Every structure is written in structure tokens, then in C-alpha cells.
Image 1: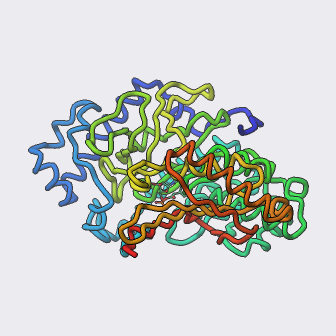
Image 2: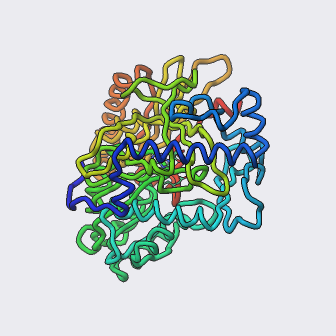
Length: 444
Ligand code: DLL
């Protein structure tokens, strides 16, 4: 569990601790305005409203949200690149994009007002993690079309911290710079934080002793609480989970507070719903479902009921930190990356949890799913040994493999082959880690 080293701080108290009835009135007002605007300016939405026989003026309560059409990644592809804009392109001051698996990226255009909004929600993020103007932020999220680098940069400047725009890669140099510049906060993907820990070790640098880093804000990919423990132990910092997606704004949609009991959603700007991915109906309170967001204050490309495909649980209770904003659990997987292996639903996060309970293994792994012609699906997990295990020799490596096979079978209900590999043998990532190779989809 994360160390509670700080007392909660709040960037925008009026907004973040607003009584819920007031917040809901504000959300409704903003929803009505946004629906009117997209209906008037975006042909896609006009068609979708008309097809339902719905006029924006019929939205009278937050429950009416359910009458609105969903927006999917496919809709964004169909309207690529700027078909969903509500303003002329000359009002757009920046464009980000996410690389898709199927060719064309998904585009996120920002007006000047959208950039301001992004700065505001990122300032909330840093403040929730206890980062202030006195901090030196080593920002190792990738700069470029990806929203991570520039989003964290913007927020750090907004709170007047000292930001080091190092981006990803050249890890040895990063270790040197972190030490020389006295970084106190580290921002990068959770998997890259472990690469940095490993690099320091290889360089003979005792990270915990030599670095002043006390806070890490990690996101952009799924990671479990077990992974959090590893990171906190290796880097000697308090790790905060941050969530976001380019279609809404980028990082800044939600963030943990020092209580680490869910991620507070900036609900005055991003209205969350939780649905059953198969039926589109809301799930019952406390159940897990697919997260859907409506952008309430975006100017350039406000999306209605955007299907994130991320599986979470929502908690609407007020938090001990004082925030009234709904909390989402850590992302428990994606509705589209759940693997179905021999008919059994397998979540990569469950595999990760099993692997990380074994102290002899490093948190570096890949999951391979394959199906030879006319044969059953095969699940294979490759995971790295820690150097002590590797040095103990083959017998102990094989024993560990057997143990993990047994644990995976018990947890997942399907059998898996396990290969414990040499330290440093699995490719590291500077950004989002790619951990799943599903050869079945490739048809070979
Ligand atoms: O990953 C924005 C971001 C940058 C968030 C830096 C946090 C830190 P996209 O590239 O559009 O945006 O990817 C969005 O990444 O739908 C989730 O599936 C996944 N994701 C993002 N944050 C988390 C997280 C950025 N904390 C997609 N935990 C989302 C699990 C996450 N998954």
C-alpha cells in the first residue's frame, strides 16, 4: 500500500469539493449547452439525434443523458481527421493524436480554451499528488502527438513547478539528470519507472539513497496494486495513479489523492457513466462496467457518451480528502482486451497479479495467445527471473515455473505454459508497454 506521506491539498476547492446537488445542476446546464452546440455544428451528431427523433431541448435532467447517442472510436475514424470539430480549424491551436491499431490515428484538436481547461485539470492532478511550485518535475512521458508529455508539461507550468521536459528514452542520461537537477517528482508510465529503476541499478546508482524523488504520477497503461508496491519499494516514492484519454483531453481526467482509494474524476468537466458493454444499459451501483464520458466544457471537439472500453467500478461517496467528485477504481482491463481462452474470460491484470506475488520474478512479462490450426487456444506467459533466481540455476528456475503454472491455473481457471526467462531478456518500453501478443488475431 502507498505510504501516506502528505496531507491532502486541493487546487480548486470550489469545484473539487462542491456539494453534489450543486455539481449536478452545473453538469446538467453544461450538458444542455454542449448538446445544443454539437447538434448545430457537427453533422454526425445532428444525424444521430435526428435518427432518434431527439432534440437537444428535450434534455431536462441528467437521466436524459441515456437518450443521447454513444460515440465510438469507429465514429471518430469515420470522421477523420476534423469531421467532429464544432469550430473552424483556424480556432484550433494544437492537435494531438493516438496511434491506432488499424492505420489512421484518432485525432484530438484543442482550441486555446481547451488548452486552458487542460492546464486546470492537470494543476488539480499535481496538487492532489502533493506537487507544488517548490517541486522539480522530471517529465519522462513522451513529447509529441501523444498527450502525456505536453499535458504534464502544461500542468507543471500552471502550478509554477520547475519542469524538466526530458521525454522518454536515453535512460542512463535520465538518471544523471534526475540526480543533478534534484528531481522531486517523476512523471512517466509505470513500466518506464521500472526501466529507470533498473537502469540506476545497472549504473551502480542507489536510486533510493541518491535521488530526492518523493512522488511519482504514473498512468497511460494498466498497472496493478502489486506493481505499485514494486515501484514504491524500488524508487522509494509515493506512487499516484493518473488516468486520461486523448478523446477527452489527455491525462487529467482523474487522479488519486493521498488516500489512494480510487481516482477522482474531474466531474465538472467530464461526466462519467458506467454501462454494460453488451447492452449499453447502466450497471447497478457498485458493479463493474465500461466507463463512458461526456465532455461538458470542451470547445473544439466535445464528445457525447464516448465509449472508453475501460472497465472500472465507480464510487460516488465523498472522500476523506474532502473531494466530492466521483471516484473510479483502477482500470481493471479493457472490454476489448479481455482474452477469451478456450471459452474462459481471462484478464491480463489477473495474470499480472499472480506473477507479482512471486518475489523471485521481475515485473517484466509478456502474454502470448496462439492457436495452431484446428487446435485449442494456447496461453503462454514469459516472465523474467530476478538475477538471484537466475544465478541459483536451472533447477530453481524450473521449480518457479511449476509454481506459477499452478497459481495461474487456480486463479484463471485455464492452464498456461510459463517460461521464466533470463534477466533483461524482455524488451523494455519507453512509453506504454505492449504486453499482449494475440497471434490468433493475425490469423497465423
Ligand atoms: O494515455 C493519456 C494519459 C497520458 C493518461 C499520461 C495518463 C498519463 P491515450 O493515449 O488516448 O491517452 O490512451 C487512453 O490508455 O482509454 C486506457 O485504456 C489507458 N489508460 C490511461 N491511463 C490509464 C491508467 C493517455 N491510469 C487509454 N490505468 C485509456 C490504466 C490507462 N489504463
